[in-house]
Image (cartoon, one colour):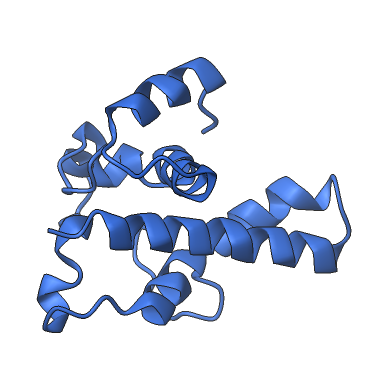
Amino acid sequence: MRMKPVLSTCFLALMPMQATAQDEFGALEFVRACAVCHGIHGRGDAVASSLLSVPVPALTRIAARNDGNFPTEDIISIIDGRGTRGHGPMPVWGYEMQNDNMAVVGSEAADAIVRARIISIAEHLKSIQE
């Protein structure tokens, strides 16, 4: 599902973040890919989460569940989903984002773009830890 830029911008304005382009990009990617299930603030409280058969975790508590450490590489791997068994109902964003970019650029460039998008989401998640 693609969100219209105006709607994405409205959601983006509601999110607390530092005023850098990287932060804004990560927040926007989060809204596009994650907010429908995890909620606009990452608390697992989106309306769509009630339709799933498994609980949607609060993404603001990742560090708290890991003794105060944010496991960046693990989060990147989970978001990407390629090569991960038992991904559950979460989309394999690595493939989804790769498909988005393959029409524009070749496979190597698409992989680099996908990695940057996923890293930006992980960095955004790191910034919203409670």
